[in-house]
Length: 215
Image 1 (cartoon, rainbow, N blue to C red):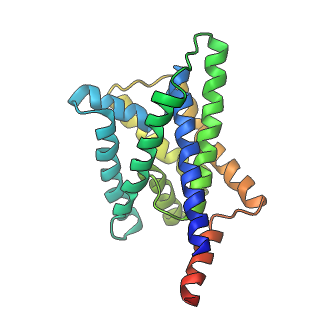
Image 2: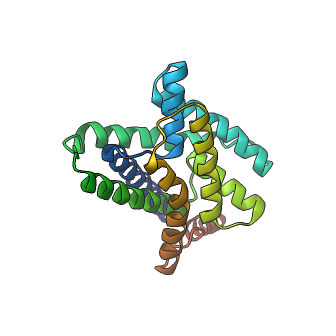
C-alpha cells in the first residue's frame, strides 16, 4: 500500500505543477497551448463554457486513443481533468489572482517559466502510471503504436490541436506556435532528467504490481 500512496502523491504533485504552468502561460497574455486555444474557439463559436469543452474534447480523445491503442476506452481519463480543473480555479482565481503583467519582457519571461513548469508537471504525473490527461494519453498512444520518443509524439499531438484551433479561428498566437514547437522537446528533456535522478516512468507501477502479487 505504501507504493500506492507514493504514486498518488506523485500524481497530485504533477497535476498541480502542470496546472501552475498553464495559469502562468495564460497570465502572460502572449499565447496559450493549442488544445486550450481549441477549447476557447469551440466555446466562442458554439457556446458552452470552456470547461465544458475540456470535458467534451477530452471525451472524444479518450475514444480516439482507444482506437489507436486498440484497447477499450480509458474512461478514467476524466479523473485528471476534474483535478486539473480544481487546481486551475484555485491558482487562477485565488492564489495567483494578483498577477498582472504589462511589460513585454516580463510577459515573455512568465510565458517561458510557465512552459517549463507545464512540461515538468507532465513528466512528473506520468510517473505515477495513473490515468493521463486525454491529450497526453494521445501522446502515449502514438508512442506505444510507433515506438517514437515522447518528444516527437507530444509535438504531433499538439500539432493536431493547433490545426483544429486554426480551423476554428481560436486565439492562436506566437506563444501557441512556441508551445507547439517546444513543449514536446521540454517534456522529453524533463522525462530524461527525472529518469537520471532515479524516477523512471515504470518504477512505481511495477512496484505496485509486485506489491499486489505479494498480497
